[in-house]
Image (cartoon, rainbow, N blue to C red; front, side, top):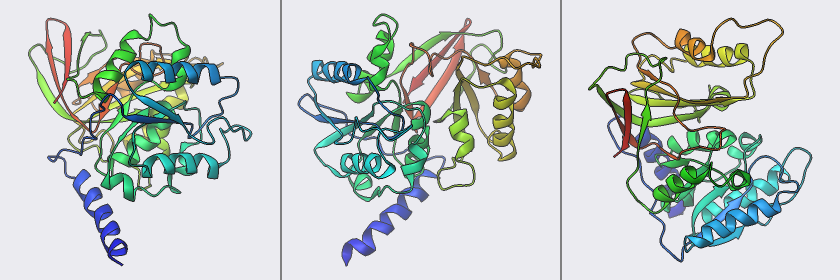
Length: 330
């Protein structure tokens, strides 16, 4: 009877906690050598990719970690890595198992939203752990943010198929977060940056992810509050008119009304429509976001090999000096 009363109460407290702009989210414990992490596939199929997943396993083992695979990791159900029930079971097992200290998504694709509402996060709230991935995994970043817990927007296991030199910084940044090291970045200022003046400082908890997934979360319990936040966005494989449509949807939902700043990551493999859009993707974005909001372009995160890890839900301080933009996580 106690669990019936206490667990819903914990969920209520967690959601209220995450919606208070001035309060920090819970940081999952840093990993230690000997800890165990789970690789699971909550979305797209892993056809002919076992050797890549094994490569990711060896990487984690080189850090002193133990690695287990979800029982259904290599299942195949049309587009997906197993049925919704199988993928959900692997995720649930990893959430509930106290011996699993981090959950690493094997890949994205599509399918996370299909299992999101089937998951019970009660034990996860009691014993938080890092959930890591990007793209379709944005659905989990959003939902878990609203539970009051930080997550990692970073490379997935299938990212190990890329050229080792091109993903070295991606790997290093992910390891830093997992093992509790300080994280900061410096990037060259883009000519498209707006309201980014020299010696300027601004901050806020970092949220966001893939634009299509952010738009698909609107109107649900997983929709984010952007008030006093720094919003990160990235996208792949869309027409410009489609990106505009999704951004307009976010705008109509007041995503850009009270946000402190917007960081734009990779806009990869933008498709060409038979009718030209007529402007650069950067200009498209600037036309949607209110002129008063600072916008930073060219942050190396998204669907490119150089995909630097980000702590979603952590306060980030942004400063500018001599055409260099510095981003430091507290």
